[in-house]
Image 1 (cartoon, rainbow, N blue to C red):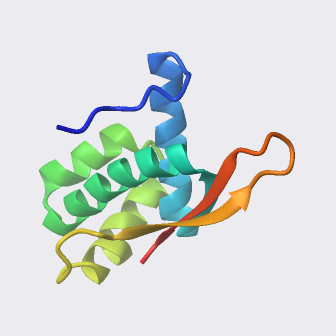
Image 2 (image 1 turned 90 degrees about the vertical axis):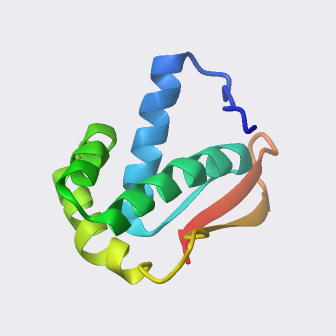
Image 3 (image 1 turned 180 degrees about the vertical axis):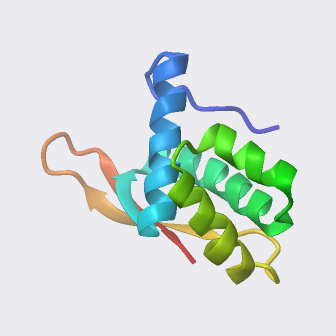
Length: 113
């Protein structure tokens, strides 16, 4: 059983941060963040892409409940979902870059495959 990481944030702040990171990942197709945030963002992004693969109205409404930007949801269902139609998971990858200069936090690049 996988457990959610708390990321040192209150629940509302953590959910908002993950929503913003998933939205940025789907819009830009590549983001740079810490390794633990990248792993949590990966989980949610893969769920959104799985919804996009279903492609029905219920899945679109579920995605809109998590991602507030309608343009990103449109891109998710029109471009990203069909792109991964023949793939069974593993839509993203986490590439470790190295420590951040300021606080030596481990930095990673999260990108769509």
